[in-house]
Amino acid sequence: MKVPNGPIAGDFDRHLRACDNAVLPGGHLPVRIGAAQVGFIDPARLPALAGLAGLAIGPDAVSLEPRLLDALGRGLAARGLTGFRDEAFDVRATPDGPVLGLIDRGALPIFGIQADGVHLNGLVRRAGGIALWVARRAADKKLDPGKLDHIAAGGVPAGLSPWQTLIKEAGEEAAIPPDLAAQSRPVARISYAMQRPEGLRRDRLHVYDLWLAEEFQPVPADGEVEAFELWPLDLVVAAVRDTERFKFNVNLVLVDLFRRLGVLPGRGPTPG
Figure 1: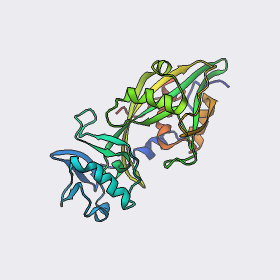
Figure 2: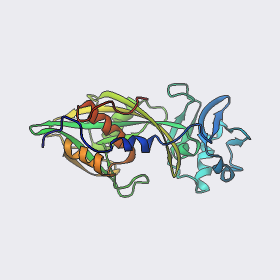
Figure 3: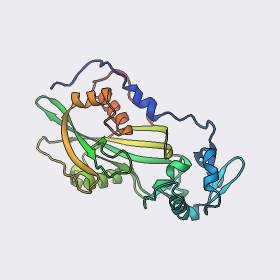
Figure 4: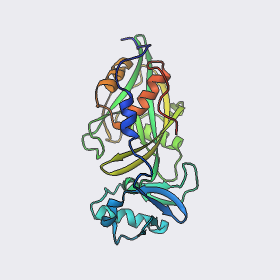
């Protein structure tokens, strides 16, 4: 099938609106480490947090104690307020500022702390046009089980850069060798603030393109993906346009890809 090269009917921007649906500060209180604001919290959540080690609830802000953030993450999970992920993430006041502490990934949305992630577009040039590798998330994933995803994607854990995370995730999720993954090229950064049942997600996605040979076959390596399929790009476009089959933030990256490839007019999501 041929890649469309003109405007396509359909509400692609609904995905941007859905992911960037939070008004900040809105009614949120600031979350601080010392004098630095690191996040936002819904005041309705505060009664459930009373007495937890690692935080102090004041009338105008919530303060976190950096030395007790691990205990705080475990305490939240023990109360059933989050799922403990056993994966520490850096806490910063600004996207590229100094690390002020480490907190479990599961606690990030409660406090509206920004997290970084990587997304890799696995692209193939074929005689019939461009194709994209599509992953199906495992049925036992805690977040969006069974949804469609990129060939590799993941959060940036404490101590790693986005580039290091890309190489790691490409190998772990799709068995892409490091020397091949290193051919990826950074193409975009996308930020959004999204209210979800687990809290406020403030994510910054580092997006990469990797052009793969047609004979390359990704292999599920760590159990997070059930299978990979190589889709013609117009099939991907239709799925984003007409369905909710892709994981919520994958849609943002794909809309950006479509626009960069000339499939859609205008600009992609606002760079972060």
